[in-house]
Each structure stands twice: as C-alpha cells, then as structure tokens.
Image 1 (tube, one colour):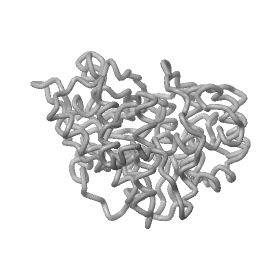
Image 2: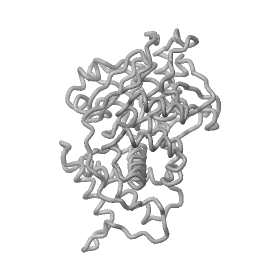
Image 3: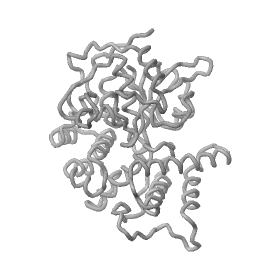
Image 4: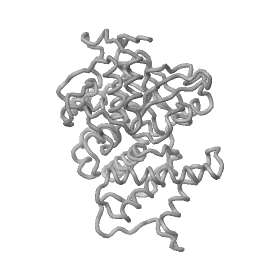
Length: 384
C-alpha cells in the first residue's frame, strides 16, 4: 500500500493551452429558439436525408484517423448513439426534426474546427455548450470567442443571467464555460472580475491549514472505484447522469472515501470549495460534480499536475502517460477548445502491457485500457 500526501502548493491561476485552432462559425442563425416552424439549412437539392448527411459529416471528421472501414463504421454508430443519448438527457420532449437539427449542427461544428470525437454524451454536451456561448457572444457583441477571449469572458461574466435566458444553458454550464476560457487566457483582471461578480474563488489559496496534512489512501481509493465502477451507483450519492454526466461526481466520491478532506463553504459556485453534504444541488459544490471546476480545484490542490498533449497520448503513451501516472491518480480529458469534459480514475497498473485499468461513470468504453481510452486526447494527470 502506498500512502500519498498532498503537499502545500500555491494556487495555480494560469493553465496554458496552445494550438487552439478552429474556423469561424459558418452561420449566425440560432437553432435553439425551438419555434414551431424550423427550416433545416442542411436540406439538399437531391433531398438527401438527415441520417446520410450526418454519416457524411462524421466520416469527414474521421478522415485524419488511421482506422479501417470497419472501425469507421463502428465509430459512426457509436457517435450517433452518443449524440442521441445527449439529446435524450438534455432536451426532454424535443421534436424529432429539432433534435436532428442540433445533432447536425454539432457534427458540422466538429468538422469545421477539426475537433474530433469522443463518443460519450458529455463530450457532445460540451460541444453544445461551446456552440451556444459562441452564438450568444456573436449575436450580442459581433465577435468570435476564439478571436477575443478576454472580452468574451467579461461579457459572459457580466451577462450571466441573460446568457442563461437566451441559450437555455444552465447557470452552472455557463460558469463551467467561463472557467474553461480562463484556463486559456487568464489574467489578474479577469480572475478578479470573476471572483467579485460571481464569487468563484479562483484566487483563493486552497491549502487551508485544516487540510494541509490530509492523507490519501490509494488502496481504499481503488477498492471504492472497483465497487462502484461503470453503471453501478452508490445510493448514498446523487446520480448526475441526467445532468450532464456523473464522471466528476464519481471520481470525487473515490477521493473523498479514500481520505481527501472536503473543503466546506456556502457558495457551490466557488471553486476553492469541494464538498458533498446531501442530494440537493445547494449541498454539492460545483468542483465536486463539474469537469471544468474539478480541474481548476485539483490543478491547485494536487501535489503535481502533468499536462499531456493529444499527440503524446497517441504516439508516446509509455513515457508521457504510463511513466507519469500512478494507481490512484485522477485524470481530466480536455477537448480542442481547452474545456475539460470528462473525469476518470487511474486504477490497477498492468506491467505486462504497460497500461492501466481505469474507472469511470458516464463512460461506455471498456475500462481495461487507459491507453486506448485517452489516445489522441489531451489530458491532465493529477498526482494525489
């Protein structure tokens, strides 16, 4: 058994992301008003049906992947199923043509920005969040978020209630987007504004005296992860599957049950707090259940954080991941917009295959290979 202790470190305010590249959006039209009459802008002259169009968009986005036709076909089905699951979880009672409109917009967005796919519902929920916030900034201020992150963050902070009303995103979703953008372009001015306006606690020192010597039991963490992995749920905790995914909630459970002390506070939006005090949303911190807030909290609290690029996870797993990760660590999966969309737990090491098992919720993949799971995806490894 290996015991790890969290060492006192200063708050990390800037997480640098490079090579952010995506094209300007091709449309200024909103697809989120859900009026009774919606005309699809994807209707073609030969009346190509929506399923065929979606297949073409998926195949276009898979062109750069080194996979055979059989695997391509498998990926198409996985992606379509994950998109439909995202719609079912996030848009109740939505008409079929409207759900297909959103799915197609998401697929076009991915093609335009060469985003790639991770066929789990929360990945597409994350893409949907990008689309809606970018559309809000474009329609209200005439700029693209990726071209002017600083002003966009200011607008999202100052207009939070209006953003929620106009996009149908939740307040929590918009805060997650703000924190995501702050990892791309962080400054004293923006951090201060976010803390003053929204009480996000981004500057607060997370190494309070009460938790400075917290002991984390790796063996207990792995036992809990094994017990409640996959579709299993501990009835003592709320299940967030229908609210964007249960991944961060599950990893937080693992860490808490293995000795990581909670950090209590009155504001669930404050990233310096990390707690679960009951099943109501007012009793659960955002850093406990949200992928981006989890990342901000643990990037400041973990003993060490390793940033591994998508190229490294794909081509250099042994030295970039296997040699850097340990049983009992947590990992954030990050999309090409710099947003954490998934959280997983590093489980048993396999020395013969130079790989790990991993544990996760809201993740339908086989959990036998961390290498396969993160290949081609940027990750943050949190040494706990």
